[in-house]
Length: 116
Length: 112
Image (cartoon, rainbow over all chains, first blue to last red; front, side, top):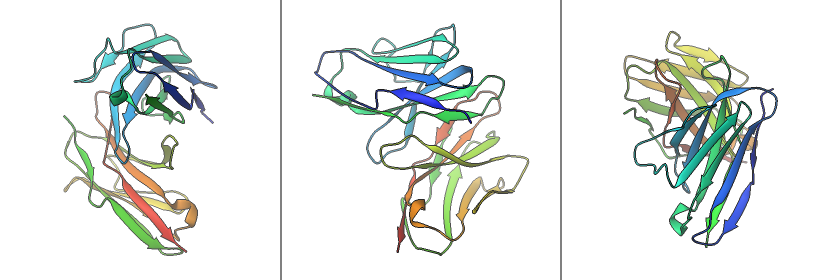
């Protein structure tokens, strides 16, 4: 079955530093990956759509210079939270769509980011 | 924008009973609907999906019902088990893009 690996699962960083989160599709090619943020006891909020070989498309209200997304290959997308602040502490989740299957999403296991 | 929401934030159910989780959506152009299960600290796990040209779909112990007239869908879980305790989200997608909109989530707690 389709497997998406997300790394790290947990990270604690100091305020002002940057953190990179990786999302890999292990056994399929993903032309599109999505990045979500989830605050405690809340739903998933789409941050951006990441397309292989092109610039990411950000949702309204999401700062593209703060949340840098790179989708350099069909199996890897990265989200970098730059100059992190405590309010960026959240659960970040990626999902990947199989090439040619529009809604065939598989979610990663999420990354718990804590900024201190 | 699209809005997907759930009717109840929590559901407590006796082990062995059936569970029904409801969801309302607002975008009549939505043509694809998915139910996800999320356990604490994990990513969402696919349960079942349904397209707008159907009104019912069954899986293993789960059934999704879609009522396009009132823009409502539900997830029925038969013989609920302790392992079913989790947060359940509905999500919907439009016809022209593959972005999903998630509902608020219902926390299901199974009583032994």
